[in-house]
Length: 328
Image (tube, rainbow, N blue to C red; front, side):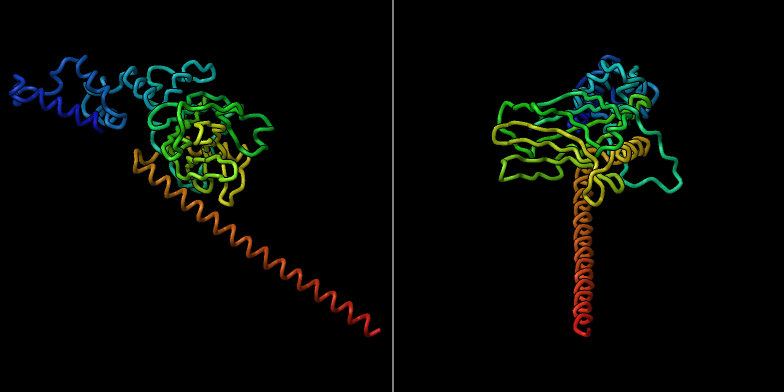
């Protein structure tokens, strides 16, 4: 937004009489094309897309592939590895613009309407993962996952972006100041979905091990895409970065069901952007956790009642047996 304000101020200064311009006759389109291109590269993605709808001349400038490539690489450094990925298709001039349109907004959180045809499950997933601390990128990588194997489909859904070796940051880590971007790409369709809340929705520390788990969870209907970073914040060591899918009861979702939720999110419309959407993601996660706790308490009460009934039936049977022996 600051870049947008600076751009607007530059435009106003150009039109002012003090700069030798005539406010009545001069319009922004009179600026040289290279100057306009430099100005547009200072805009954020949402502003750039909106400006492209203003006129045909702005549309040509706002769809410049180099501008969108620079914008995407600034947000997601790992995207550079997607173009080198042999399984990714559709990486032409419009790749980065389409990527931003899919990946920057959050996916719709509502479940699909009844009767909606379920989209085909991706046979391969490509994850572009970027972990930042205080605005500095400390991890960036692309991970390929074979999603067609019987082992993946039958096991709980899990994708690891960081293997057991881990890594250490240059200094200690404040988990609340971590930001995580986890983009899931279906190479066949070219669709992308944002699987992370960007900022932590919860930070939990184990006083026994000293490790902290920062969760970047996105709730989709009845399931949650749970991206988690496990680190030892005292020494700046990041041990694990993973993505799982959890159901409303807190149990793991199979690979097949997790893929179905991700495919539906890829095909669904997108919603809010920016800090407001991140706050909404945190609220939805809070509601998800509250509902999960309520269901867990209800199940515990139901199991307690069943145990009590079973104990009563057993006691009654034992007393009846004793009475029968006494009567004989």
